[in-house]
Length: 142
Image 1: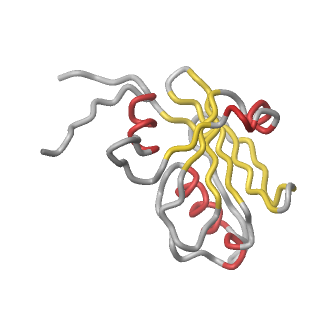
Image 2: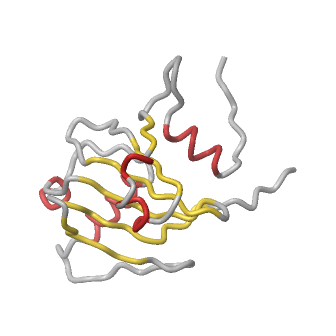
């Protein structure tokens, strides 16, 4: 059995609106605890992490829906990437991927690569790109 030593580690997440940050948090390797009073936004942050990493959300909390975009600086194996998705009510939002830190990504928007939610005959989906960056094998359906 082949073992894969690649991993994905969330290092920073920024939830943006109108060019400013609604939420900006640096995460550390290992377990991170998000705590707070009831109705303080813990589930909203968990939903936005899920979305930033490629999950599909169609039902947004009012707080999450007020954001324009979500940026996740991640460590994929040994390389840092910034993943960006726009908050859209319709779901299936594409992902922009930048090789480098969030700070570098914000200064180099022309270098972001856009990948669709689903693959087509002429482009790969963002999940295929992420799996490839993680060096995970792809099993194509017939």
